[in-house]
Length: 441
Image 1: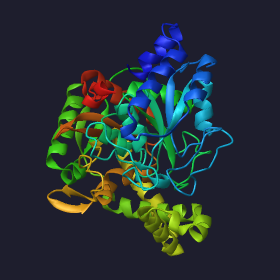
Image 2 (image 1 turned 180 degrees about the vertical axis):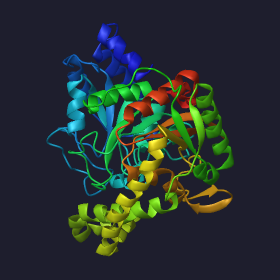
Image 3 (image 1 turned 90 degrees about the horizontal axis):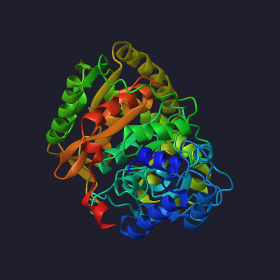
Image 4 (image 1 turned 135 degrees about the vertical axis):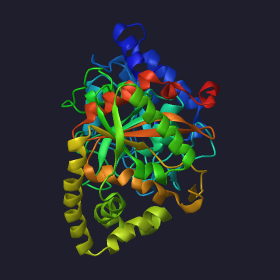
């Protein structure tokens, strides 16, 4: 059952909040091998279900990434350093979900400090992909993607700095939205990069994500279900050429479907695409190092090797690199503005490869072994820089693993992105397909 359908049943009284919460708690308990959750609030959630306020999410069970504060629960960020960190208040995002009637079931696994694309914390263990338990979920919101794909919860909230919602949504065959930067407050969230951090939904469908976003961002207004007829959509061939050919073929079929639905589809060239990743790194790495400066001085051995290396890289970058990055950010946004003067959306394969095996550090991209994390940068960094909304929607399978299509809008164009994603999903059923694992829990 989708989040939207469940919400309707709860509002009508056909199902009680306690029944809904208990049902999902039972599924979570049976799916421990996925390691999607770091902590579960079973007793607290059942008690809160009894007094869930009326609202659009009345009694709907949700879960949040374990970098987002929930009062009375640990926020560990999947780290040794914050293993016993108890939150004293809700993050604004959580407070808004609760005000809309949602019940928080627990905290979801993440890459350590949300600073990586694998969700294989050396401190809390890897989250496993429900489509193939020996593969990663992506990251850093990997537990969020896995929990929705395995039907452990109808909707989750993750964070995205440089791809952390988009990657697991794609790899787990679910729908995720990186909202426009600043749309959802980030207070009460363990920071990565203050320039780029965002908070957004992961659920089965664009319709579900839209319902969650209405709670998370009261200024967001969904557009009517008018389809995509007349929308001008640019196809980023540069990224189709970088993707694995089988992945690109799935995404191309999705683009063709958008054309059949009435969108005006044509190729587009994104300026400075190759430079975007470098610009993001020159800003993100120093900002992450600044956020961790105290712990880098006193707790350096307590970081996992990969996160420690990236934080030290940010610490060692010269200050001139950061200033140059900020100048380049303005330049990039000025150049990109011309693209969105002409197009309502641009599209490309959400990710260039299917999820790799756990502990596999390279991915075969165009028959060359390159570091997995680096392969994803061109697909995420351009829109991180732009502060643009991006939805990743399922659009097919390669070797039994999900493939996604990214729909990107202009900054503050979240409603158009989700309208187009919903129109695509009404015409296809990729988002409705579930891994065999779901039937076994």
